[in-house]
Image (cartoon, rainbow, N blue to C red; front, top):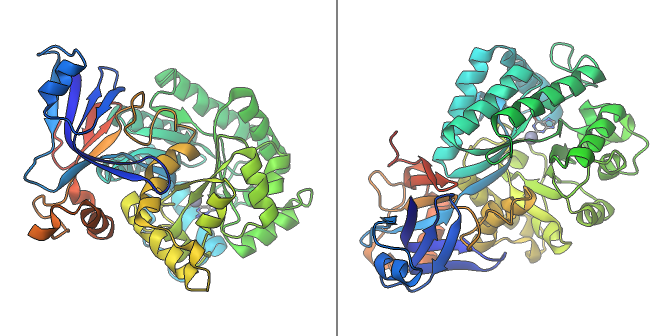
Length: 451
Ligand code: GUN
Ligand code: ZN
């Protein structure tokens, strides 16, 4: 059945333009596509008549006028390791390369057991969806069966997901690696075949080619994945320039590249559907190359702080025309929430600005753009998702700030100040405020969701 959503809507049009639309109406058809967005609407019924929607042909979902609540687009998590979820917060004093060996590879290797995959993957999907993440770009592990299970679970719950079978045929521990190029190739193709079978048009789940990072792949594997992405138009995700020791390692492993980005480029991996996580230590030339290729960056501020990797210059990337979205990078990052990640992005940008260059500062409008439209850009889904413009899909969350047990305290004089309410949501809100979550027009999660 068609639905009219009625009440306050908040969404981004551009980096600096966060629209707040009180008394608005969004009409969504049976396929989950937005037919209209009407501002200053009198009532759902008046809007329905205007659009020739007969009485009885639609249902109505309204925000409670007495409560501080609004519809917001679903979040994009453009970089998250689903398998690492049990390790959130566990990083001690390590930095990237010793963290991988100490915490990460041992955990990921346990996903040979499908029971582990089932329990962790179902948990991480529920947790991210409950936090309003309607689209996630997931890394799984090297295991084919476990990776397929992640795709099955995301599809059955209804979270949009890019599913990456992690490829690593070099410089990796014997107990957790691809034993050969052929093994990585076969497993990658097997996962693609499985996803093609369960979701033939990739409407909800889509395979994503996933060289772990250049420091754990041979040139042959990188080039094979690059060619596969060109031949199939499948997206790619990987890490780039997260940590200075990693940058040196890539330089010594792949001397054919003039830079980290050039290694990927020479292997055909920098396309318009490529997600590059971190991008902390890029040079000007790398930034220009990434912009020319139309690849996107997943900014992972919680992870970059936790692993002391550095501070990504987000404004510097955006200024050059590089697409940027947000990533939790669980479990380099400690939070599965994109709202929390947006908060962290804002704070990290202020830290950067304290070094003498105010232009690094991100605003509330800008980080909420990165969490939604920016993420859609990076995932190549901006024609379909990211805000409430007609023609896009209804992937949305209903945020209620004064719900029971809310972590946000709202005072009477604040109710008519949407900018203040949004700021308080960004800095104090969490999944308790996510009352309902829809993907493709279907209700899939939220505190008011019951099966
Ligand atoms: N680089 C290679 N693998 C990883 C990983 O699992 N997490 C992060 N943050 N960086 C990586
Ligand atoms: Zn990562």
